[in-house]
Length: 260
Image (cartoon, rainbow, N blue to C red):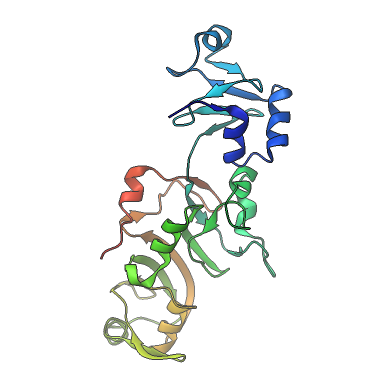
């Protein structure tokens, strides 16, 4: 990989227009961590393992770690983010009644340049405003399509709190298939487990509008609380609190491969 001007790297990572990125460098607001790809001159000028970059600074983008206005960042050619969606938030850039999930993200993630008219990372599918839990976000169009397409059969696990007690009859209906009001073809759960009297664990491989709520209504019950706890083989980490996000690792991405 050839060295790039740091100004161009900052632009690809969402730190604003090239003029804004140049301004950050001119004001001395960008520091780069010293590593094996750092020039000897930069190593000599470093303080506590970092050096203040200038407009002329060139870096190898892959593996680059830097600070912008004191905040740590790492270069990512494409962004793959795990987000724990809090209740009362909307998966929309233009929410109607509740805060947008995008307000929980730092501006570089929201401003990453794309070829399309839409900037920044996008949610992979949507969760209702009152649904909490695991949400993937990315600026990789192929990844978004793969994870969203019902043809790819990516499993998603939901923890459902119900209004009425659950029983084996309801469970069997969910597993064998129920008819929703707008689709004559039965929709069935890939797996279902009664955890307790009012707690159901439901696994789906497609994502129709309000699907979990409508499936429970079809078996004469009602959803009182809904939380997505797993996508593919990856579970929502206990230490990622509502409203928090973090980068996905390569190993975690591998856990979300489509089932077929």
